[in-house]
Length: 133
Image 1 (cartoon, one colour):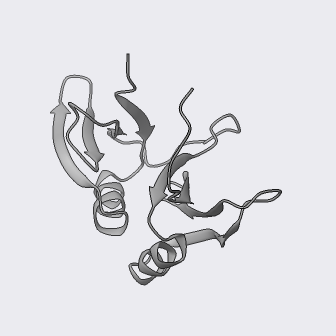
Image 2: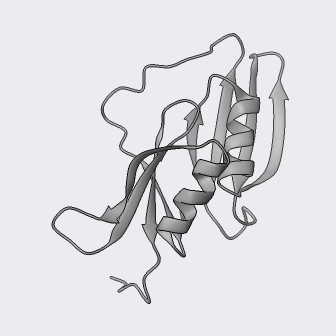
């Protein structure tokens, strides 16, 4: 088994695609419309769906915002340098909601960014290696 994708409902598909591709550097992998049920799907990611997990952005026609609730936490992305990543994201108009620095009670360098629908995206400084279970 492997994780295929995470779905996020978005209020403005074009803004969301622009954020994930232009600000976070993902690629638009595919997009489709369902006219009968009035929704559009866009899949974005850093690599091919056959080998990597991606994001499914779902736009339900006529819905421009959602109550995000308090159960969802965040999406985490590994970056080579969290400070440089934040500078690049800020320069492209992205919102840094937590400046880069060590996680509380630890040494891992993290930051948080908000997408156009206010979803939290954690940027985590790349480490030399991870221990697998």
